[in-house]
Image (tube, rainbow, N blue to C red; front, side, top):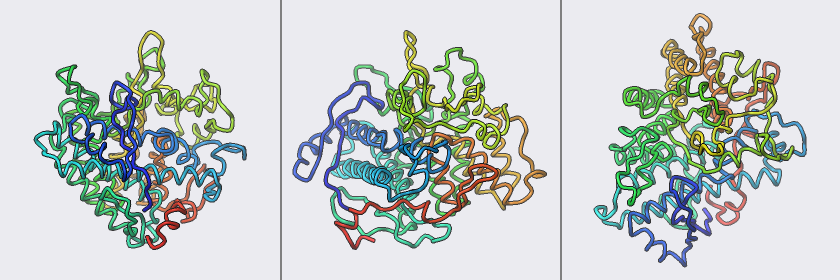
Length: 495
């Protein structure tokens, strides 16, 4: 594929590092400086920070792939005005110039992240591991991030494997730091490459400090020699993130046994060490200051991005009172639809705490990162890329048709953590299709504002359900993002 500039950050303060520094543009004529940069542990840490920073951009998980375009496609938001900047996206008009720009940026920025990981990995190959502090963590993170970015590209731009199978060209899996055009790999090949990278990352991250320090612990013992890699492992690519991605990748392959194996391995281990855990009811309801209520369920985040001031980014989109917002950008919900169709009961913590009791169309989930004058910051401004409930959903789906009771038991564990006291039973969900519908319903409740639901509909090739009376028919036309035109312009034979 065509790539003109590779971006490597020397250090970044908007993620896990405390200071803000400049970043370096690297191109084929300026690689000497970058090579020098990756000759020390600090250089590698800074380069990894650059990958996380890239993923946190508004064009990716800062906005568009978290609550923006991707959730407009899932029909979460009540977008009716043709002047709204996501109206055409909500109508799946991928030929619209503004929508095309958003999609092209997703492609470009994810491949930029991949190029950066390849630069790190290529440099590590020629570096004496003994000279690099936390060598295994650095390499494991880079491999995991490369696999994650390719998986995301495949999910959005790849074929619908449910109807087209796994042997159609999908995307190029890039393992080298170069600008050569690559012929697209099939979905099967991409998924196998992802598996290889994740297995290697799993081995390298076997002794990840997250296992003993939990997701928010700090492994630094000397403030003068602060190492961001050892702080808040839940906001980085970590061992449990790799396990979760292995479960997710196996699900994409259609390998239910492997998906269940990896999912339950993760579930069972964190139940013991509590490195990742369900957020307790009192953490959601008890704090008197709204910003200190953990309505983002941060303790459940397996892999997240730490984005300083994300509240200030999300606030105008969400219509929060302390921000002036443009009606053409704000993302509001149909409260009655949320209450009556999506959640169905007032006892659901998500309905209770994500939406004002007055029934206004605001979505309050991102208010949790608000700064409080004189009191510091509430829960960390994290954007979730993988959370514990998804692992339960993967395990549950893998059991449908084999052990429906086990599938419902897994769903009921998540429901209980969300304040739902009435369990789902086989009496009410007696068929495989009924259990799958129950699963989709639970995921619809959970993933509002996290960019997961549209891709679930695509993987299962299911109609997009708006409410009991309205749906959008599943089709390749809406589910497959168009590859940017310039890929074919510069490399016409890649596919």
